[in-house]
Image (cartoon, rainbow, N blue to C red; front, side, top):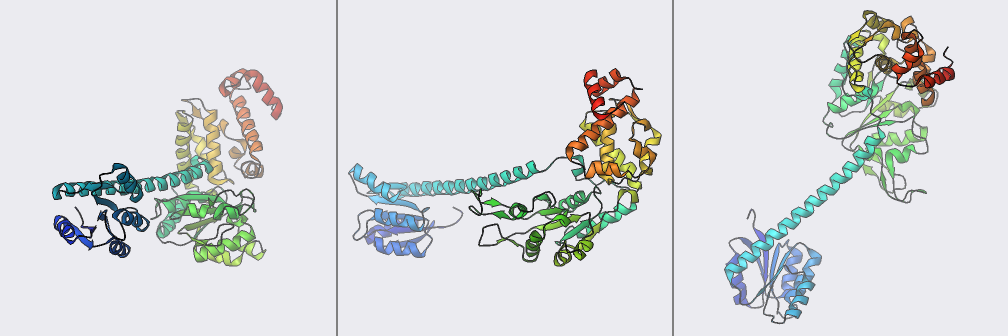
Length: 474
């Protein structure tokens, strides 16, 4: 045995106590009592592992003692020594005291040792099984939470954790980020839409000591103001109509990890007050709860807006801005780091070609130059979208040519309408514009041959004609 278990022996006859003590003293720490009452007091004051009690004792029987011991420690191994010959009475007595084993008198020391060792092994197996079941329950709960979070995220190539760059500007950004990964402070990432703020936040998380825990992205501008508090802080059962169960908020789910608050400039003012308290006290208050819950979460916020200007306009709390702006990392726009364009082009071309199971053999020489001369108002995200469009237009084993590039990119001008397509338009309109562009480019590549264009697009000629009419394509 790895440790000496604590054994309580109880018998109103001293000779029996001596015999029991002699049998087990080498392997157990022995406590002894001459009555059930005395034995019960010992149980209350000591963490007893096993009890061997005589059944017939004055004042308190062995079964009564074992029955009372359950309330103090249900895991105690309980063995009763009995001279009962009435089987039914014996069974009733054993059930009342949840006795592991009964031993009839006269007992043999060697046999009793075997019985005790078997009972302890069984007790340890039960404890281990209960511990494993509890661990399994916790793991299942964690898996449910992670599954819930995975369902929330849209899997895009842009969310890949790899940061592709060649420019000195991005090298400096990553050097700054690397210096802060294991300094547990709040970080504010600023930069235009599409520059890769979430990507940088993931990079910081995955290179920090929190990497084995969850990274939870939250778009503060996408959650309705009336729901943002319960979404991030959770709520208690009955807190409001429809709250039929307790629900953990995203802050609690990300405990030990990182929560990324994107578009923090869009957060409602009433939520800003509560977020400030979380940053100060590291404690959240679920909706309807009378008690706070401590959380160990790293907060990384991001915005494409000028928070200082929002503070001056009264749309953002100044104290929250100071609290968030402890360490600022600014990502320059793509137009300010032209050296990254070729590296990003090659990276996205490989990733997207693999996604659509296409083998792009060649890229015309002028294509990269055209990409470098464009200002990319939608930044890396717009670049990725354009490359996906080119891959869709190219045959398997084909070549990307200058004629396939969107006209505004070829002209090398910042096109406001295109920016609105990728950023501000509803999804349905974005898809329509995207489809229109693909159809026009395919028709141009086919010199207006509609049958050939329909085959390339994988639709019937009649469907192509209907779509051309819908989008006003002549």
